[in-house]
Length: 230
Image (cartoon, rainbow, N blue to C red; front, top):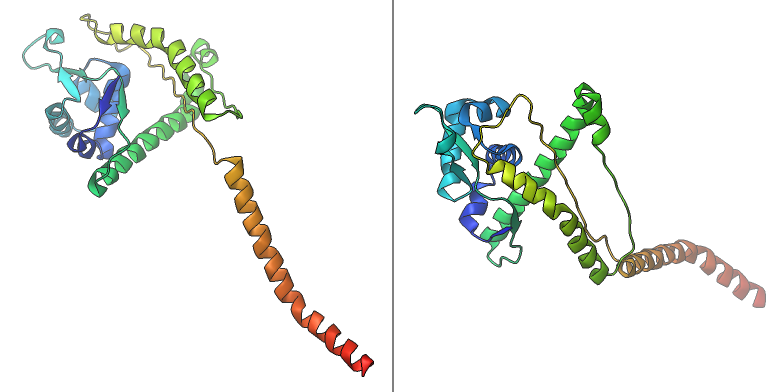
């Protein structure tokens, strides 16, 4: 797992198209530029330009041993995993970080949406093997950190298997290979205490508004009582 803490790298990946290319490379491993362009539905020249920008910042690398002739170029992601440093102080760096994260979230959403649209076209055994799940847990921050460690431990051997296949010098069979994605988001929601504070605040505002609304009626009652006493 490589930490990305270089602002220039973040800026390179604020391009939606580059994020798409990087995501494809990250998932499918070594691939020719022509095949990458086909999967991205883009011109090979355009793809080559963006690959050069990413390669300049160490995000992708060439795999010359897979080339069958001088015209064929194979590339792959240079990172087997990555994590973003989130404690930037400079506004420019924070903006670049937010742009990267936004593109990453968009990429994940689009992949899930595409799967839901096309999954019935998959062979039956692949449809049955895929799954999705959502759970809402009440955990402390320590328990949440422990859960994240346990999930990463479960995924570790599968990541290593994937890395060994990606780094293999054998030319992959693009016609038969399929890509599997494991997406886990272990995130805290707003705390109950904060939610209760917001609820109390809203209740207090509602009560003040109700009191203001009833004030004319109370004033009328007071004046009526004063008249009767006189």
